[in-house]
Image 1: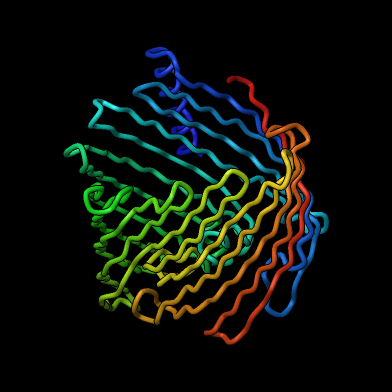
Image 2 (image 1 turned 120 degrees about the vertical axis):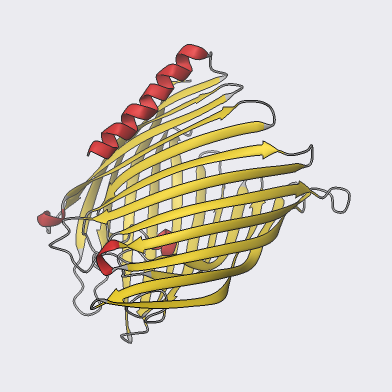
Length: 397
């Protein structure tokens, strides 16, 4: 808890300092309260012995935003209490804290720092992001980042960043099958407006270095990345983003006191199509690259396709769909000690009605998830349905 207390102390201190030094152009403080009831027919995503249960989630938190001409401060703290109807041993309190502070030294030079701490326990906590399934083993995640952006000319900008992630499962001795990991990411990027060749287009050039380490399994993967890309506003509503290029990875393992290494070339990239309308919106994101595999003994080649869409059918009513397909793959002795080949599909339609516009709402959702483990030649699925009453009330605006 020491890290969490330091994080909260730092960001609150920055908030007080920011408030004393400058009057805010925009200042908001929102209270969030929620009550959700769900039915899960396969809590652990078991392949042969599914366990179902009803789960009540009570949540509460605060979000604070303070923006001036030079500063940008955001803080949030959310706590969720999970109460299982039958499996009381699974009851848990999940926590999520975030802080971000940005400052513009000059119109051309800016910098920002951010930090986050979370403690979570749901087996499906990573499905929407990575497609990987975990157990109910509690996990703590710390994220820290810093970035600097500088306008080299009127049409050329640059940015430099570093990010650190630490992920720890607890208690360690009781759960040797869930290795911890550390992730270091650093990068340098350039963006150049291409209006003289293509209106509303920006060329992109990015270089990156990632290092993923797994202390308990003595596994390490280093990745060097280079991409070229394009950000293009096709119309006022349609936007296209492309970043593609090669990557080179080098992995090292220690098995029974002997060192093993493996290196190779591959490809990485992100392609995103986004539409923003008055009553509808959607985005399709395609990704391929090397990423940490949470709860496994190494990294993986991840390929994913994620689609999100919504439609506002009335002033207070909206509906939407979120779906994704994920492939996490690693050959034994290349990116991980043990082979990995998991394919995950999920789809989640949802419906929301605002009782008080954008403040008090009722939301219903159904999620179907399917997981295929090709290494062990087995598959499982899970149905989840829930109803939530939420309050997002402005205390200060």
